[in-house]
Image (cartoon, rainbow, N blue to C red; front, side):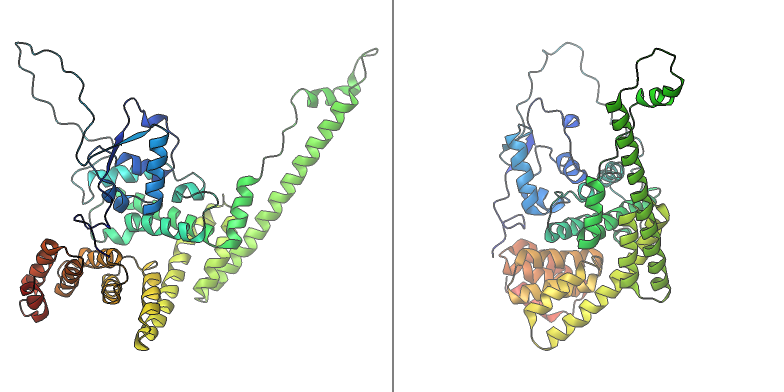
Amino acid sequence: MRLGKDGSSGGGERVPHLAPGCDPASLSLTPAEGYLLSRIDGNTPLSLLRQIAALPAADVDRTLERWVKEGVLVWDKPGARPAPQASAPPTSTPPSAPRPAAPAPGIDPSLDLSVEMQQRVIDFEACLDRPYHEILGVALDADAKAIKSAYFGLSKQFHPDRYFRRNLGPYAARVERIFKKVLEAYELLSDPATRVEVQRGLGAEAPPAPASPAAPAAKAASAAPAGAPPPDPAAARRLRARLSSLGRHHRAQQERRLKAKGFFESGMAAFKKERWLEAAGSVRLAIAFDPDNESYRSAFSDVQRKAHEERARALLKEADGAFELSDYKDALRLYEEALHYRAFDAELSHKTGRLAWKLGADLRKAKEYAMAACELAPDNALYHRTLGQIYKAAGLAANAKRELQTALRLDPKDVEARQELRAL
């Protein structure tokens, strides 16, 4: 596979911009769609939108094409802009210099977090009360692959480990809140048992409330004055049916809360015994049965992180075993799965990228893994050399030269990097 000049797989140089007269505020968007639309400025090409969006590339393409059909977007050539409006005739008074725009409320340019990302955090946090599938930016009936892909994309943006040792100010707590909610959404939707309960909760309609005139009428029936018309039997039946429905609803809710309590207590007992996976499964069910209980949600993040660590260790052990048996294809699959739980492990990112390159599997993915390793550990010469070799295999000589030179600057004794550089 040969990458395009921008490092993408090609075919991504079209540039969308908002259609004239379109008001983004009038659109009903998921958090992921809102972020994608906010990146559309008439200058950012499709290839870059695919990389920075919190959606899989295929979903980005489908969303953009849908917006084009709905008249939200139009396509331009790279760098093109909508035609400017006619300007007013010049006057004798020169225009005053434009004042720099004031930062939006809550934005602090002095933090170790880009202004763009700060706005992203603010926008996403405002939508955390939405249903789980909307938080992840997937359809209600999305399959496990789409849910995992959406979670992986969001975790790369909001995982607290990404901002280790950075000054985030108040955004540290906000990022933590977002990640906990994204993690919760992923875990409850990816587990078939809890997903059934979540969707059952979404589909459950509130029982009809008794009609206000009927209750006073029924209450006053016995005190009706002599000669008044008798109460309507049909209205009385409807009232009894409503009250019966309300009672069943309350009983069902009470039963669900009792089940949730049992699951939670079981999960906490397993947690104390360090049976992380068992604990996580039980707490997931507790939240699914009683989603408004804050104590369950508060404990979930710690439980699930332990479960992720255990799962990652098991995957890495299995992957290393497959590698030793020269089953490289299976080893790559397992390393990629482990990265799902350790997105900010530089060594694992490098190992996965290098193996993907050696297998000739997917140079775009190999490049992404190697780039992640370099971003996480920028002073590691080996990581830069591997990225340079991947760029070279993709035919991107300038990028390859840059990374190989960086590798040599970090480790002048790197013979392999020097040989690769001479061969360019």
